[in-house]
Length: 236
Image (tube, rainbow, N blue to C red):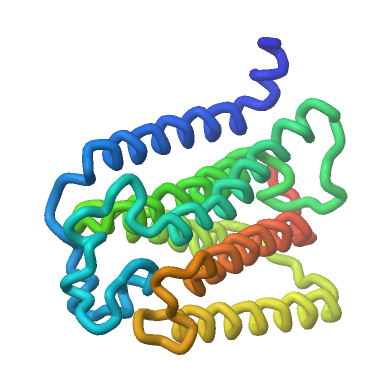
């Protein structure tokens, strides 16, 4: 058992950390989410529709009494980020345990540091966003922004240190087409599902922003797959 935990130490650490943060979120929810109301109602679209009064957003009941989860759909669709992040961390342990390695050589696949950081930041995207959607509190919104900044800062930092070799043109074109399509789909869905948007139904279990979160998680997973498949120069 100890050997299994040691081999999957990145996954174990990520899972334990995630469970602790989720416990904190549930604890704050049980306490009624104390703190100043988030100012997203001043620009209603920034509250992302769910359970927001479209005519008088400042009078939305979840701003005053968010309950355990003010926006349950927008909160729990963040499970996509947590799944992708934990899967990334699990993959590190699986390769260590089985001895199977990627046929590609780059800084992601040849070591554990960058893969661990990518997986950890991806996991944190989930609870970071959950803090905001569950609470509608000003202080909790900082965790949402913080989690995105952590992840977004990793991508250019990794690109700055990796040694790049051009992949096959067909792969680039296919990947670029998928990224463009998903980016457009995400933006259209995000815009249309704002409060008062065409797809906005505050009381529906289908929330456009929830779809956006799941598509974003899929994009994060695809980006990691691309980084792993890059054929680069192996470093010493």
